Length: 464
Image (cartoon, rainbow, N blue to C red; front, top):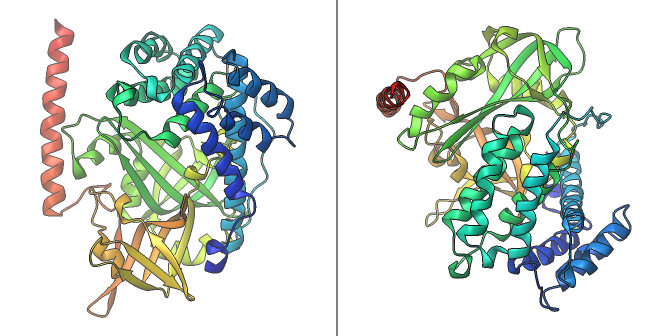
């Protein structure tokens, strides 16, 4: 991997992010009656897209917003401009990662037909988001935030609107926990602006494409599992290489499963909630391939997982996959609304590096060919055997190349380390199929007890 490319500057990136930050500062104070000094962020955003097809609409929207008379269409144009800038930043970073790893990427497909959605509910959601923008994060109160509850309740029964409903529900929960905004010591400016802009664009009819129509038949070779856990939800995403049965070019794919989670389920117990919904988790945890027949897939490489289209295959070492199959695998195109630097997750394999671990902070850094690559061990799940100490003592690593405001960094999915002159592999998702580890077994039992109690209580409420 060309580490020097990862550490080099990316043309135009700083300027694009500066324009986004300027707009976000304006959004923080609100667009109802912006102060002339705060309105500079609006014009910075308009200037940044002056050479794009959005130029005229965004310039008009900036003028209207600066005067405090912006309508919903104007705010939508500002959200689109902000999203376009971050999309351009994502594309530049993805191209740099592709160049550094010598990886090819599939061309973006033609837009799919939009899914049918209820326009009245989309309009209601957009109205609430516009109220937020006018109020600003510093002006938040419970009256403004609670305006989303009826909209979310009406959206959840509609499958085509569930993505937007989940976003609004989580966004509103974060805002409600932070009210009143005037007393906040620290505001997650970029995050809330990201959620606001994405929500605005998802209210546009046709923004969400219809379900995928393509299918895959061949062998799926797991690289590693990324587990993301929150107080009320958990998601596992398996990154893998797919080898077509017809001998075509291998390609990178993902398979994800998400579940609601009671806050009493902790650690390895979360696998009990995820495991029943996707047989791939157990196969990946056991180090087995999966044979797919007609598995639905999106153009962006996301498998619409259905267990009836898969069966367990032969044992396969993920590190063998990373060494042999990963270098020739083609990366998928990125969905338009997923073009954001924070969503960059580029599977890579590294070996022959040096490691450093800061004695004070515990942070780990890999050094390869004289270049340094930070390692984010905070993303390691507690529901697995992979630890920061194991990463620091590793000799090979499968991970996801990501980016934040300070540059590229690595999120480990699995490492190899030498124990008594033998290579031993540790995987973040090793407990997905079950474990004999004492800590893992204890957490699984606690989760079983908690889930049983919750089910019994739910049944009692339903009987009433």
